[in-house]
Length: 542
Image 1: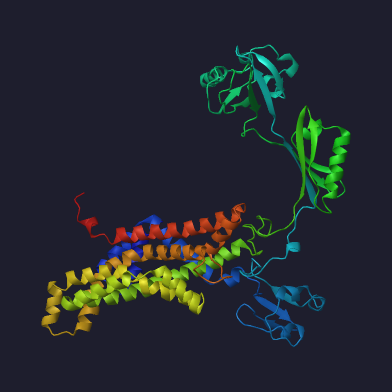
Image 2: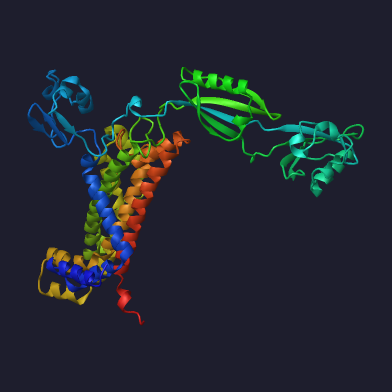
């Protein structure tokens, strides 16, 4: 960006007939890189969303059929035009494109958008290409053993603890426990309490063996007995943080291992590998129960699975952001949801600000009884429960974009009316307004020509923040189920699906990221506008 850019911008603004103060404010906003680029990014995103049908959709951009051109993206054609079936319903163009009659003529052609999926279209599971292979997942079972201790800390007996001590269990009898692993002070105190036949709560601490192997040592809750115990048994198990997956093996339909991860698979005997491969091959015909095998003295579970398309489905080729619970493309719904959110926000903010300006201007200009009665009416109106009214209206008339816009708009104008009222009360006593009164100008001209242009500063500075708030409110209402009716593409509706399918990370990540980016851009623009309209910038001594 060169230094001549602000001058060109000011020249363009001057052509539109703005006054010098407005031109100076525009120049300030233009100099703020973050706000300026955020403004253009948001404008471009909204512009792309307005032509979403040209970017993503299941309606062809152009169809060449029997020597004629059709443009379904801008005009409706019944199914009878392409099939001769007599049906006047909306055609399934993808089905027509697969039809042998359509494909028989090489001059027939359909041109779809770059993303050939609509926001309401459910993808056919068979259209998703997945690797034709089964997966064997080898997972180690957590090792749990016991150690019986004498009062002097020596080991009386041990079971299944060789993973921790590093030696066979039969060689541990009579050896002191601390020779193989350190005991924390509080664990020793807990042992002494039990040998002293005193009540003690349960305790679990982590210790490390001679080879650095971690283990969790646990003591059960102890209650006093008739005679002190001669021995105390503690539980030794692997910590939950220990890795459980020992390896993965991809198996082809012919029963051959085509990819191996980890060393556990090589440690198996040939007969065990053949048995597991046979079970994995059976996985192509249906579910196969898991198996347990012994590897190097440890039990390992083998689970057999095969990738099957069930919705919601993870990101795959052709659907980079995944599919929702109805098999609809997340990227397409985010794009259409962007158009819905920004259109709702712009219409809402413009309508509510117009209403707030009208009410605030009347109160501030006339003052007195008009202002007093107007303030009481505004306070009463503001106290009405918005959400309850929205639920009531939705149950009576049904949820719709227009109803949501009207219900939220009739309550959202109150805040801006306060600012306009305050500006009019301040400006109505200024000399230029009193001069207009003395000249006999009507109230309409005084309000719209002299006072209102000087009172629009709070309206302009609050506009981006109000837009951000409107987008957030729409997402929140859709998330709660009080917003737009299904199956409208909405970010809040996708987040509601993410709560139901909490394992489908793509349902929460990408809509949240889109909402975050749009709101962040709006905040950056609002900060730039507020700084550009700040009159103190050139009044401070620097």
